[in-house]
Length: 191
Figure: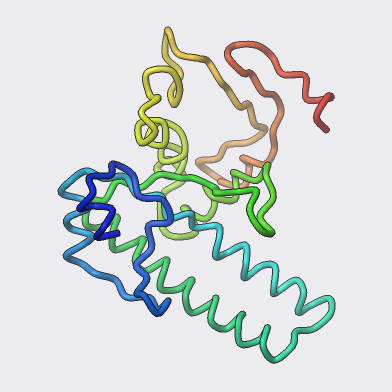
């Protein structure tokens, strides 16, 4: 991340504090510089959670090898460090955004809600996590003039859900309707 900052990036993806040996080490001075420069950080929080869930499910269904047990323990420890660093970055004023990084390895597409719920699990309010996944993410990609908020002249992508995500963030999974660029999407063609 220090090299990326020095290079002048405006968004850091996988904004995790990892040492060259793979260990976790939060660096307050680096986080302060990220905040001072106004760089967005996408920590891709669900990635590590997904790996933990995957091994936990395998453990329940089939059991784990000693190597997999060790991997699960390491992932859980690392996840705690990731959540701690994420919280500390937010406390220092770092602008965080949601990005799923899905469709790699074992993380399938179509689950962006997981990233939003991971932000809430990490201590963000439901509203802050939704804003991080919409308007702030659009700002970090320099496309906030066309998407990210519902305003006249913008693209009018809209997700209608059954429930109130401010009361239960998991209601984001209860998709009732979708509009893309103002047009109703016939979801019967997708599901």
